Image (cartoon, rainbow, N blue to C red; front, top):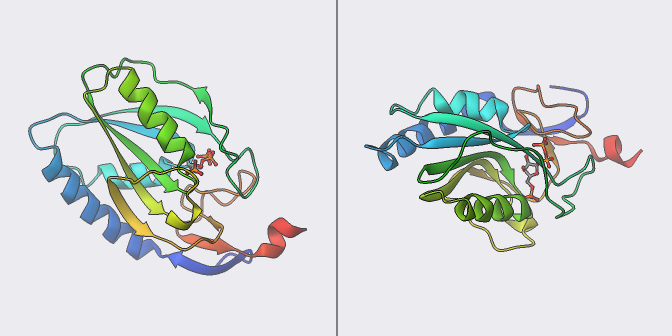
Length: 179
Ligand code: PRP
């Protein structure tokens, strides 16, 4: 285990189980459709790559970069679009792929934006849900694992852009961000 990690919250094996289960669920839910998966960079990368291997229907993917943490340990609620989609979502069944839902601000804003742009449906799949962190009402449609209000990193999740490459999700030791 990495020296800055206090405990592993979601192991590599558990992540794979989650991706298999969610993949089966999404395959059934979107049967007969060609969903457009919209990944929110950068955090979505490992999860999206692993999840799509278990989706057994035709699908497409695009990416957006949105930021709300601005390098700290708590979301600012100030959602900025840093990089936008390059094709229209009008008439599409959009599935937003996210690593974590915390305050809910990012997903609420992006869900409303994509509906406003004419998507036929907009749903959200997230690896992690931290409901105790909510500042706005938002319920993801598909959840990998519900976690307590702890600052987690790894498997796409960062602290000041570090730790995204850990193969598991772990709790960051407070001394790392308190110094
Ligand atoms: C994180 C995470 C979500 C968002 C969730 O992204 O990937 O997009 O914050 O937080 P919220 O529910 O409080 O809005 P971040 O802004 O850190 O960008 P990143 O994906 O590049 O790490």
